[in-house]
Length: 394
Ligand SMILES: OC[C@@H]1[C@H](O)[C@H](O)[C@@H](O)CN1C(=S)Nc1ccc(F)cc1
Image (cartoon, rainbow, N blue to C red; front, side, top):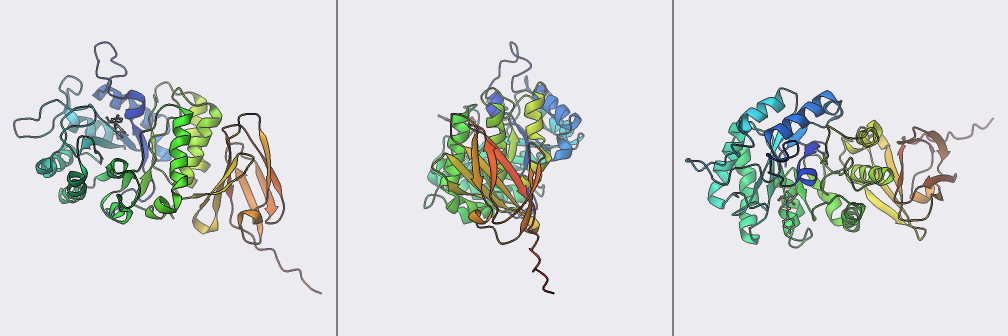
């Protein structure tokens, strides 16, 4: 969507995977969906170096609202869990140099059973969110149908624009239509949405992360070309820092999401996150690959019989990123390859390993070896090639 927003994949924090629809603030005040939770995360993003690295969105998901609209038919926050209201929370977030995201649903109810947005409420709800100072809307598709979605998702895009406030628009529409043509029109999506969920919800497990990633790379020739500045495929949240992934698997999710030019929405507890998880999420080399201004989505190049996959993303100024991933479950695998075998042009290349900081220089035809852990990755930033100087002839 050409609204000047998300010119690189948006980054921030989204409540859903880690906090779901936990509304029992009496028994579980630290983890329930409440203004305190989002203020806590805004404090961490602004005090622990996240904001400076680009993680600027603090996004509310399902279960934030009252079960009733107000007397003017407007959505309203649950008064007990958000006593200050959404406008106040937006001010708190904005005061910390961050942006606030909110959640709605193009249907009678949200997936969690809260009030949805019917076709005749689209303009009202867009205006409400703009009046509150909201900066992004995730528009879900539960309790809906194909024709309501076909009319509603474009109409909400226009309604958000008509408010005059710049609000990034995340559409769950393709995920409810099977994610692929002909049910999904990726050209239209790129015109009306800034990002879109193509596939099922991510859960806190390696199986889920790998299943989501495999769907996107299996369908890379269809979904890849749809992405670019202002319009992104969304494989769902980063679960790094939660309970289900090992260090290697956390590095794999971060590396694969960067190759996919995916939005980077963490769903974790920034108040207690481990230093290891934080180091992966704050890895500057990976973030610069993710946020590359060209915004070209990467692809899977090879699936070797050994269980090694090779992924590649073209970057600005003729740079590129490579990821070697191991599907094996035995021991680190020493994978030998050369850049010319990966269709790199003739030249001399400097390479930077993003997790170890190791630097190497290879000619396109010379073989090098990477040792890849089971369910882990080796990720390289490959500098632009230095052309081999013609041998000077006396
Ligand atoms: O309720 C909201 C929740 C999150 O926003 C996800 O990111 C959305 O994809 C939708 N969603 C959930 S749990 N959706 C859903 C998932 C499984 C199911 F059987 C019925 C609904």
